[in-house]
Structure formats: C-alpha cells, structure tokens
Amino acid sequence: MKMVHICGLSAVGKNYLIKRFVGVKDKADPSRSKHEQYLLNRFEIGNRFDIVGPESPKRGITIEDVKEKVDKCVEENQCDTLIHHWQSSSMCLFDYAKNNLPEYEQKTFIIWLDPLKHLTNAVIYRPGDTYKHWSVYHLKTKFLKLTRDVLFTLKSVHGETEESTSKAIDIDIIPEQLNRFNAEVVTLAASRNYQTDLQLYTTVDPESLRMILNDAVYVPKKK
Figure (cartoon, one colour):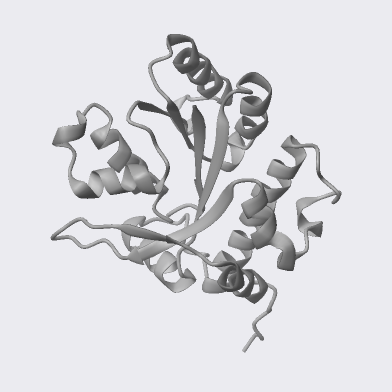
C-alpha cells in the first residue's frame, strides 16, 4: 500500500493531473486508454486508488477533513494507493501517514515547470490579481523554497533533520537527499496537446536539478 504525494506550486499543473486520475478512477482496466494507464504507472498508482485533499478553506475543507478521509479510505480497505493532492497547508500529512499508516510506503513527486512557461500558464489560465505580481525570478525562488520545505519535512518525519530550518539545507545535496527519501522532481517532457491531450513526464536528473535550484540564488540586477 502506498501514499503518493503530488506536490507543486500553484498553476504548475497539479489540478489538471489530478483531474486525469479522477477521470479514470472508476474505469476498469480494459477501458483505460494507453495514456491513462501511462499516467497511473508513471506516478506509481495502483488499480484501486482514491484522492485525498486538497485542504481548502474557501470550499470549507479543513486539514482535519482530509485526515478523516484518509482514515475512512484505510478503514474501508477499498484502495491500495492514496493520492495526496498537496497544498502547503497539508504538509502535515507526511507525518500523519508515517505515524498512523506505518504499513504505507510514501512516494513524493514535485512538479516543476520552466519558470517562463509557468508564468505564462498562470497569466493566461488564471486571470485576476492573484498572479499579477509574479515574475520568473519569483517562481525560481518559490520552487527552491518548496523543494527545501518538502525535503525538510521528509527528513523530520524520519528523524534525520540536521538543519534547524528548511532554508539551511545545502542546495547541492538536495537531489541525492530527495532520492534517499523516495522523492523526485518531474517535469513535462511533452506539453499538453489539445488534439491528443497527451502529457508525458520525465524525471529531472540530479545535475539539472542542482542547476535549477542554484539559479534561484542569483538575484537579477534592477534596471
């Protein structure tokens, strides 16, 4: 049994991916398309699964509600995989699963998009004031913080935290440390095609991930 954490910044594609899982949840194996089965395999999701989260104050869903659904899924024993639709406010589910579901393996995926592509997605598909202050540099620093926060949480859950805060984690050790705690950063290898609706994900290799994270430390000069 497994809990799969799907993590990522806002507008990075978490909702779209989760909706794809929702779409195949009640389909029998033979009726799933090859791409649907690919997504399940790629994110290590078994045939019987359910989705927990996201925690959402706007929709009246608290973190306690999310925990209750986790407990209900486990008690009813109707799934072999729990998909955690991550939000920063639901980071505590890592620890909750470790303490309450010791038989569950935990796997973490952090979705990354090229910052320029990410910024375009936010501006085009999510109009309003929420994203108008975003910039490429802003997204780079937010991704670095997210990655450090997730790793810090994973290390804390396993009682192996040497650092006092997530910000103290050395960037250069992050790729190997993520791998050690069964976590990986993935990105779209092929962008969404509106004719085929195809999405392919690839793992960001350690050296590339180090470059991405170190790039966030560079502060652009103000003109």
